[in-house]
Length: 208
Image (cartoon, rainbow, N blue to C red; front, side, top):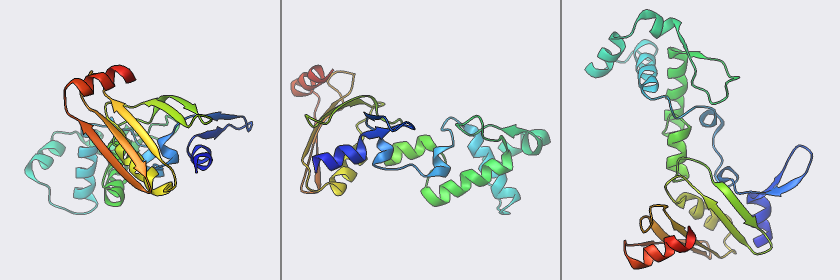
């Protein structure tokens, strides 16, 4: 079970078949392709794009704030200007209507518009694991995340590897806050959050 876990979740082969180890949430909970390519930094762009798509293509009547938002935009901004919404700069820039269609389809299919929201919902943190240290011989992994423990990842690991026992500990870099332990056994995932206090501070100091 341990070998299967490290091979499926941590073993990376590059184009030259050279092997190395890392920890990638996408190996556990893959990101849909139409979510993967869209930035999470679009801000009001997505709101405007979806409103325009709903009004012009779906024929919906907009609420007053949405109508006022589109009314403040020039025809060039609405129909002529092309916007960059993709993470990959090689991807084409889209008109507001084209972007609105893509955002709307993602919301309908996945409940979110873009990569940032999808990560937070499905991984429990806005970015992938980073600074990973993987020791398959010892069954040991250390990694960092952005401000939150990736609890959905652990729950899926429990389902995927019911014969594996995993013990994890996590702590925010704000020492003593957002600390806890996770235990996986027989397909079950148990999360124990530590209240603020001595035990949480000691755990955070040990981990950091």
